[in-house]
Image (cartoon, rainbow, N blue to C red; front, side, top):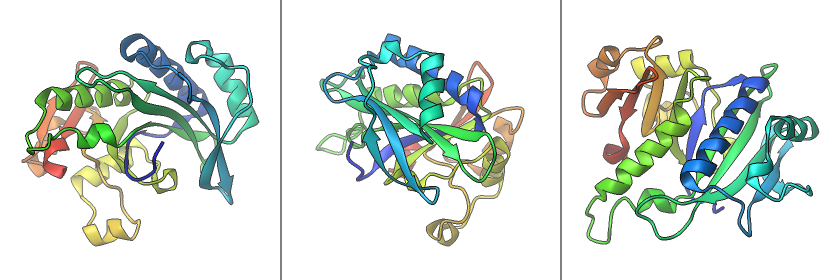
Length: 243
């Protein structure tokens, strides 16, 4: 994958066993609904760290020849051998002729025991294709991308998520639902975000309504689209406004 500016769906931090279940659930969804597969270039990759800072990825020499072979025991084994890992493949999205690269990432939180976050990394091209050469918005593709983000992010095992543009995995801020709630109620200043301080809410954000209601969000984020999912996530859709 190119690291110019990809889409990252970052789920709130959970313990390792929860993360393993999320990865397995997400694999089922992506394989069944989006034809996720390794094809000729995907596979399982080790995340490389130095002083707990991400700096690259390396393919794992394993006998996992298909994404469908990855079950919970396989995920646990991979994690036991490496600090972090990525399951790299591609999907098919309605309205696009070409495949879309998508990676499922297990990212450890080094400063908190037994905490990790699951990240979905999507190639940048799908984001910028929302507009054609005449700057006309592709409404169908926008809805497809929004649906994909919510299906992956609004997992019942987490209490929050956000989708944002990503240059590098080292830029990811792991967070919990309380931290995201505070970032929505008291947005960080742009100069603080530029210094790496504060949490940005992302262009699509979801949080359990038990933590923050739609009414509370609406009082601050009046311009964005807002709605609630059937499983109790309040969604803030700022996709078009932020591009």
